[in-house]
Length: 214
Ligand SMILES: O=c1ccn([C@@H]2O[C@H](COP(=O)(O)OP(=O)(O)O)[C@@H](O)[C@H]2O)c(=O)[nH]1
Ligand SMILES: O=C(O)[C@@H](COP(=O)(O)O)O[C@H]1O[C@H](CO)[C@@H](O)[C@H](O)[C@H]1O
Image (cartoon, rainbow, N blue to C red):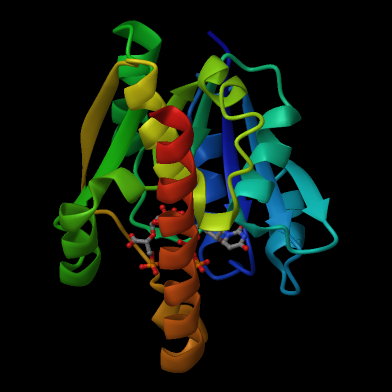
């Protein structure tokens, strides 16, 4: 089954290059798609210099907008979603996320940080279903159409839909992996506000989808 990696990225010049270089060294990945979501830094040019496909959105369209642009631009049967701010990504993480979907009939894997950093480990212990690291059969995305998911509601929506459709979901432990937190990227105030907005997106998604699902 052809595999495409879709990486939504908003101003991630510090971390995206290492991620792309690692992905390029993995033989069974057919396409690497970096979606620069209205970035104003060097994210897109780093993608181009790494030789991956870069979709440059001129305006920021939020995480789900960036991901769906990437997914719609490929015919691959399996989509690996990875965030562009990961630190410590290794080949084994990529294999472990993809193997259950490619070889074991799993519809979606959900990666969970372990032994990365205390704060990011804890966040994923409390809410593993929010993780952005996932391998997903393409047809799962088709079911999202029409749900009007916004910004950071994507992972919550995928989780709710998987339950509704009885999809086979498997958690995958990602050892020694972490990411840059919002407060680290944007400072305490702007990062904290972005975090509140993220929780609001997630709550809105729960309210909307639960109402439609049940
Ligand atoms: O408007 C946005 C916000 C985030 N992202 C990307 O989505 C991923 C997950 O975002 P994260 O939870 O790290 O949020 P952030 O810290 O960027 O607000 C990262 O690769 C971001 O660059 C994006 O493409 N568009
Ligand atoms: O781990 C989390 O608590 C949040 C917040 O991440 P930050 O530590 O603020 O970058 O990020 C995850 O959840 C988002 C919503 O589901 C996803 O979009 C992110 O990809 C994921 O990293």
